Image (tube, rainbow, N blue to C red; front, top):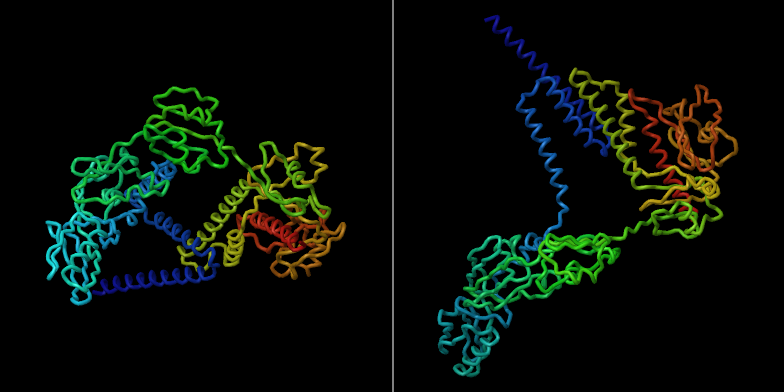
Amino acid sequence: MKSNRYIFLTLLLVSLSSHSQDFKQDELDSEFLNSLPDSIKNDVLSEMSAAKEEVMEENYRPSTKLRKSQTVRDFQKYLDEKSKENENIELRFGSEFFKTLQSTFSPINEANYDPNYILDYGDFLNVDIVGASESENELEIMRDGSIFIPSVGKIYIGGMRLSEAKKIISSKIAEKLIGSETYVSLAELRDIQILVTGESYSPGIYTLSGGSNPLHAIVMSGGISEKGSYRKIDVKRDGSIVKSIDVYKAFIFGDQDYNFRLRSGDVLYVNQAFNLIRVSGGVNRPGLYELLPDENFNDLIRFSNGFSYNSNKEKIYYESILNDIDNGNGLTQNDLNEINLEMYDSIHIEQNVIKTVSIEGAVKRPGIYKITEDETLTDLINRAGGYKKNAYPFGGILSREDVKEIQAKQVEAEYRSLIKKLVTSVVTAQSIGSGQTGGGMGTSESMIFMLDQLKNYKPDGRVITEFNLNRLQSMPKDNILMKADDKIFIPEITNSVLVIGEVESSGSFPYRDNKSVNYYIQQAGGIDQLGDEGYAVLVQPNGISKKINFGLSLRSNKTEIYPGSVIFVERDFEPQGISYAAVVAPVVSSIAVSLASLNTITNN
């Protein structure tokens, strides 16, 4: 008995210890997460979840089945990514209408007040008589096409238009009930049954309302199949074609060619498609279009909403399974009109690539300019009228989209690495029951500060290049070629140096010749308690950044400083394995670009 009691007490203590540790870990999680800025909390939560799963896998060695399930998920992710690559394949024109507009085109079983509506068995009419004899009647049209009105008798209106039936009913009642007026309206539509056949997705017999048209029936049958024609849909009545529908007239030109009333017993036959021709490149609506036998290239361009603004009508390329035509140098519009286009022919219209760049700031004619393949920075500046007298070319900024993308990827990689380091230290501390992170709370605070800097960083895409026109003339190799979407900004000359970061009073201070970094820091009140007295970051107006080493006594530094420079004093910490300067430098550089732009805007 004593042995069993000891075993029970041991198990109880182990259980209590486990619950206590779980409580402390949860408390640490909550305290840690509450210390984070909202902008990075979700990223940390996601990484913590992944890190804890890794710890669980390490401790409990997951089964082969679980490892296989992860492999399956990875493979499914690969398949999803591959499927996205095929999303841009051009669909047949018109197919999207039946996928997205079914509620618009579906028949509505409500009374139709169209005066041309044909009345038949199953329709209900409201016949209201007022005057000498008053009554309200809802009357169904019988199989023989008649309605029965007490004191009036049968009136035959089957097969008549609603407008005609109103006149006849009013006339008959007026003969029988002198001094009475009659008001006739359609109360309820009959149901009709029609057969949809041919190249429909779901051929069969469908019950529709009496106000339905052929497009309603096509939608109800799921649309037109890949082999079906959008250009010739026949409505057959009593064995004869009474109407042929071309839905292109509605979809492209807005004509209501389909607005034809169906009757019970009608057959809707979707013919096979005629010539399906693909057009791409310099048209406003690329796609796969259906051409009738008597239509040509001009009709294809009309269906694709015309040539695009940058199309080259002298460079049209034609490919055909059946026609062997040499068009190595491209065909013209007139050449294509002479060709009988066949099923699955393909036409590509070359597009002229129009590249534009912008130049703003201290130039005489700022704005957006079209550029050629071989246009240089000097060419662009000269086209913009050259520099103004107050321009500061040494601080010129060239921003480029592909550089922005590289910067963004680098900063994102640094951010993710830092998140992982932070979370790993927390999870590791929890796994051993510690209340601190692996490097102490000071390390985690410094990491959080750096994470916040990286999270809010916006890449500027700056390319360091020469803007001095005289130097560019003497050194043509430095005359950079322009790229599409480049942005040039020429600031106005400034006579100040900006000091920011861990100083007592950040701000802009007058430039003085031959003064050191230390001089400007002292102008800002010196380094505050959080600042690093050993290093600062200097960003020159041309975008080049340097890490300045003061030495322990903050002695003078020989680095040359120019008007418009930015000095940033770092915080005094350096988490293990992480370069604070690597994090700060791009952020400070981006600030310098923003301040240069703001300075010119303010002066204007």
